[in-house]
Image 1: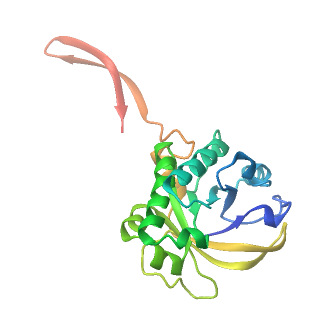
Image 2: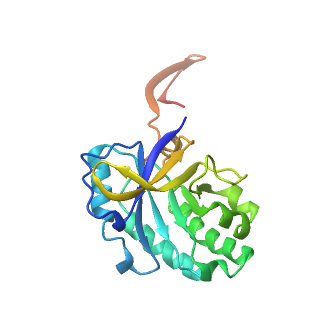
Length: 229
C-alpha cells in the first residue's frame, strides 16, 4: 500500500482545502520551545484537513541543543496538539546544524527526550530527517525504535538502508488549492489503522463488543458481561 500526501506550514500561505486532493497531510504545529512559536497557519490547516476529510499528522521543528530543551519543546508541542485527533504520527524535525554539531550520541539523546515525552502523552511519535543526517547523526537504536520520515529529493528512492514508513520525495510539488510549491510525500505504512487500533493521537481505541450473559454451571446461575476481543 502506498498513500500519497503532502506536508504544509505557514510557508504555503492560506490554503483552499476544498480544492486539495491528497491521501494525507502532515501539518507543522510549530518550532522551538515557546508557545508563541506555534505555526500561524496550524489551526486553519488542521481545521481545513478535518473539514475536507483528509487524514493528518503533525511535526515540530527543533532548535534544541540539550535533552532538557527537547523536553521543553515537547511540552509546548503537546499543549498545542491537545484536544485534536491525528491519523498520522507526530514527527520531530531535527536539522539545525548547531544541533547536529553535537554528534551522534548527543543528537540521539535529544531525539529520544522529545519523542519519549510524546509517547508518554499517548502519541505515535516519529522522526523526520534527511537521508544523510539519519545515516550520520542518529544511532541505530533510535532509528529502529521510532517511526522514520526520511527526506531525499530528486531520486527514485531514498539513499537510506534503514526502515522508514514515509518518504518526502520533493519540495517542488504543485497542487490545486495551494499557491506555489508544496512538499510531496509517500507513505507505505497504514498509520491510520495502527494509530486508531492502539488508541493513540486522541483516539479512544477499538470499541469491544459486550454482551450480557447468564450461565448455569452445576445448578448455579451466574450473570455477567462477556467482552469479545
